[in-house]
Image (cartoon, rainbow, N blue to C red):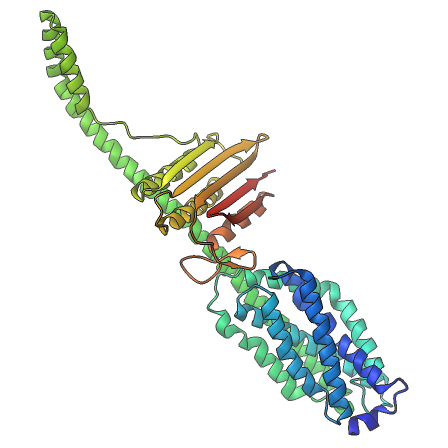
Length: 448
């Protein structure tokens, strides 16, 4: 009962101070953990709020039970942290290792803010033998949290988005150890919250250094992911450029073949003309007709097709149309695009190439004979570009949050992320959805 005897120096009811402290040291940080990932929740928002409230009541009950039995309530917090993470994983539809990383980051920030609050409380209210569960500590911690809240909301939101959109899923299986080790260091060297230790300047300096170290490591880490994502986008552009290059080579070879056929045709044309002249001179129209019909059958068929006036788009669509034909996929197009677009050619190729390639790969995995790809594109209002690409898709694509997982690897597809980033660059929007065996992809670009 040592904790109770020490707390008797405080004027407010010990149990009430403990309850307030539990709420102050958990609820705000749970808000920070959920807010940036709210768009990735699996169920209705009221279920998350209800689960949070119920778990808070359970934690308060445990803390009071530990407190009244003479056991430090901090042990109840350890169990509560595990339960909170389980609830977190249940309600947030994101890769579990990414969630673990972000959750540990939140726990780490919580511990640092708590430490700073305990230091100030010990310094200002040194007459108390224990301060951690005091109302004064709860008030000071709330003030520190409120002051830092605008910055932390912005940081947590940007951090969460970059973590979720990171294409490198495998690295998350080990990188959670960075915040885990930092938490371990905090517990080992500044984990004690005894009054004599917490009011020491070494305690505060250590926590400040840890928070600086934490943000520095996270900045470098997330910047690295940005570079990896940019590299992935460049790879997508290179892949589409290579596809265009391959088709241009094929067209070049076809042109050479046509030139050679033309030379042969010109060489033989004189003989054909002589024979035709002979039929005319003899007045044998029936023989002339039969000869012309037979001759037409020997001419090569004109297989070239133009899908739109824009060269880059036309080349890409022709390439994938040929692939669709090889795989017995019905290919429909309605493209009304001018030769010059207000979007750069590389960006245009990435959008068209990625979306058509995804549609083609989805159809290739189907066993149905009714596989199809539908492409529609047009210019709206002089500069805006509307594009829709729909394709049959027997199996519902796997989603992680609101992002789609690549069918080639167990991570978010970089192709759709590239399309979204380009759309944002041109003040546009993207919509991807799956309904009744069809995957719908829509892009609207609004270049200024």
